Amino acid sequence: MNNMIFSKGLFLAGAVLLSFGCSCPKASAEFSAPVKVILDCDMGYMNDDVLCLSMLLKAEEKGLVEILGITLTGGNHFINASYVNYGETQFGSAKNTEEFLAAVNRADIPVFRGTDYPTDIGRQELRTLDTFYHNLNYAKFNDGYGAIHFFGSVDPDLLCDSNAAADFLIRSVHENPGEVVIFAIGPTMNIAKAVKQDPDFAPNVKAVYCMGGAIGEHCMMETADSRQAEGIIGANVTPITEYNVLYDPSAFETMITAPFPKKYLFPGCCRVNIDEGVAGEIIVRGGKGGVSARWSEHYKEYIQPYPYWDPMTAYAFLCPDAVKRSAVGYVTVDSDRLSDTFGRTVSISADEYEKLPPEQQALYGQAEIIYEMSGFWDYAVNLLCG
Image (cartoon, rainbow, N blue to C red; front, top):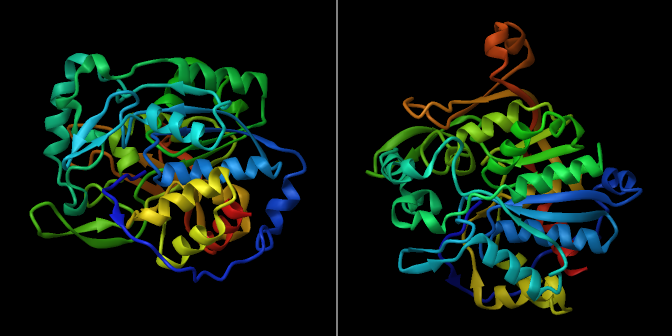
């Protein structure tokens, strides 16, 4: 979900860790056989997308999951095209994904390219998108990050608009009806394509764990011009919007209203911060090769001083007892680019939903919204380094 500039740092161990799995008996009871999973992402370099993938790779080693493949979408990065942000080259998610898989000896996992294009946006409109997004009321700390700002500066011929990811999603679900769990940790264009292309796709998915949206209590956020504005907890681009949804609200609308049997939604407020103790523990314990060694080497030199969002999806799947605060709600999004609240997500209760006329109910999708989890780093470090 995020990929900001790195700061150097080397840390001492200090985390007190739990034994793997001891805090989540439900997870161990439910994994009688490996669960088939697909990761749909906008992979960065050693960011929270990579941490989410790393947790799934280690879960696969323990026989908990079977990773069918990785599908790539535009988001924090374009799929193939690189761009320069604050003087640093941000490479495409395909390069980031394939290099990480090679580094941890898992190049056997298939990777499928999807699309960089927001829904219903053609090449002729790409230049206008850059201006459109820049004119939104961005929160100051996120001004200028992410591929959403660079449509106007990248050669359209380098942008990806492949159906390979959607085709793979559809094919995998048809080959394994009712068995596939999808982790959607970037903008949901590939999933929206699959939903629109095949009416049998969504009903035959086991569950979708989606990172996206800003749903929660109001707060105050600093805007790009340093004024204080009322915002929403979990909003990280404008005072009322979250990045994955804002990139393509129409795709999120398609996903959230699709008839998936189970939808779990993780708004931007569901996140954790890395600290010195955690990084130090991974450095000390992670020199055993593969995934753990890769993170150990990384933290010896760099620390990413921002929250981690995406791995919360894998954590809730692997350790459901860790969910501290959640609610079932009916979720919608404003997908009108002419609206002042474009990209805003809203959740209402079942009682409120039942009072709506049918044409308005069609704009909402039911999901379990997971606001807060506990014990993430205790579990994650043991999983990565165990």
